[in-house]
Image 1 (cartoon, rainbow, N blue to C red):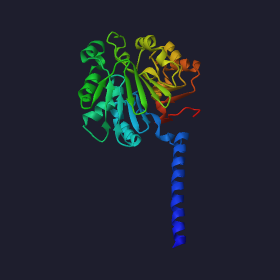
Image 2 (cartoon, rainbow, N blue to C red; image 1 turned 45 degrees about the vertical axis):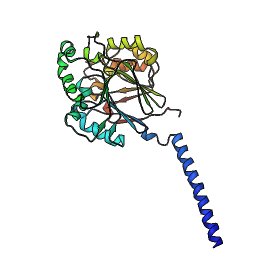
Image 3 (tube, helix red, strand yellow; image 1 turned 120 degrees about the vertical axis):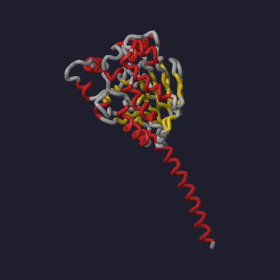
Image 4 (cartoon, helix red, strand yellow; image 1 turned 90 degrees about the horizontal axis):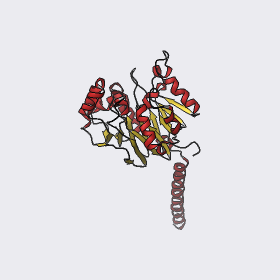
Length: 303
């Protein structure tokens, strides 16, 4: 009986020791980044011929979607959200502007009244419909389509200077729609979001054009300097000017760009011009939507 008592006591002490060892190892594994696969920026590819823009950020069990793509992209997008989120929840859905290649997927999902993915809040700033009717009549149906559905979820109209915190993710709104810019109206209505996650900076420009880019440079130059990642404006062509990218000075470029636009075989787009700008900036790597789903671990190279 005495020996049995010592044996039980020994096992109990060792169990406590092992528990401490396992706990310590789990902490060390977390700190060394062995759980990095769960903290990822995803660039989604187009599921139709159309250009589009769709990103998902998943970090510390929080999920953020940026734009989402066209109506044809909706099934693929929602499937990816279900797989990536782990809880079928989008904590924040950021929209840059109302064009259907950015809002079509969200409008389609909301129109079905499907509840398999919960959307906590959508952040956006669209022009009034009459402004679009006057300044971009060919896109009038786009804004009507998203406006008809967006009231089904909780929303927030964003303004330049707003700060949004989603768990450990910090989102700064650097720019939103300016009614006085009517040249290239819809593209220049793009909101610009600077996302900070794990000390990594990601700049989403949407389809911002020359005029909106100059406004961003004038008002927020210090905030856009030396980004880790930049989403290339207007799918990588005919977006902001070179001087804006020179200030952004990105390490990595995110191209929401299909194969036909990237290859530019007929030389009718300005994709090649943008590529040359990035070459001069010595960008380390280009992530291109034409290559399919791309996952980018959210940690510094030297972590």
